[in-house]
Amino acid sequence: MSHENSLDDVLSVHENSLVVDVHSDVVLDIRIRRLRGEREVMKRLHIPELRRGGVKGIVAPIGWDEPSLRSYRPEDLLENISLLREEVRESGSELAPVSYTH
Image (cartoon, rainbow, N blue to C red; front, side, top):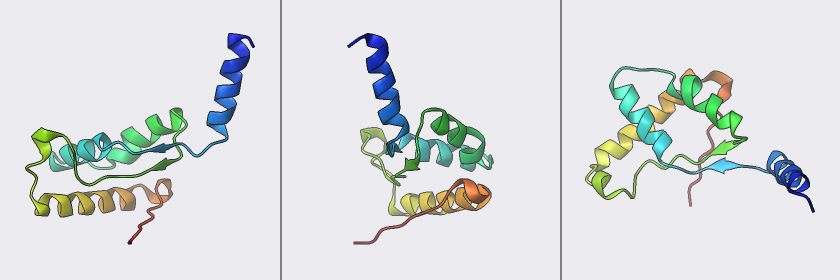
């Protein structure tokens, strides 16, 4: 199999799969930017970039494993949820939230 054929196969699988981003850096970036007064962060910055990468879904963690960020208070995590909700409202039909409770 040539390299070109294998690349075509990989691209085909990627295009026909549900690619989901589960990185917390998007939520952290939204938090930083919104607290500085920016709006529509997802719509302006992240959605176009994620689409270019073929991402079709996002899992938005509201906390972080990064040791330097573990000192966030529960209030900060609740604020992250509020900030994400604002982003969803501002994004119109670009984002469709799905929640899960166990």
